[in-house]
Figure 1 (cartoon, rainbow, N blue to C red):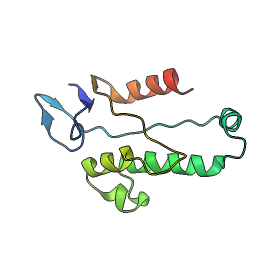
Figure 2 (figure 1 turned 90 degrees about the vertical axis):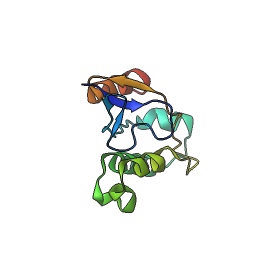
Figure 3 (figure 1 turned 180 degrees about the vertical axis):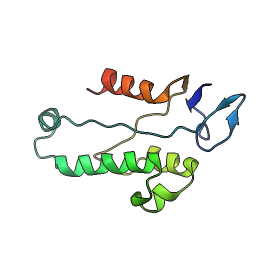
Figure 4 (figure 1 turned 30 degrees about the vertical axis):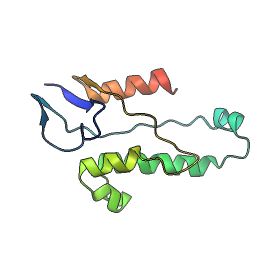
Amino acid sequence: MRDEIGSGRPDAGLSEGSFGRLPFRFSQARCHVDPARLRALSPDVDVDAVCSALRAVEAVCRGDHAAGEAGRAPMGTRFGFVKAPRSTVVQPGPVHGGTTGDPVAELEHLLDRLVR
């Protein structure tokens, strides 16, 4: 069985249900900050604030109630919250479609390949 990560449709992967025969119930974000690299780009950046904002994104994605109303919202609402531009420091990238048999491993692979 495969999980939908996103199909490029605004509603894909947003709530429990199915797209064709593929269930989509995966909502997770992984973040990594290298403080030295971040400061090389912006010497005055508040690294703690960036890390805090990224932890909040991770918490909202996983539905952590400690993230407040956004974390308690249905998956589709959480996805909309996370992908919406809202600060000049932490900006979400575009949503890309794709499927995988192991979304957790794929997320880790993408983090290694694109971020670390």
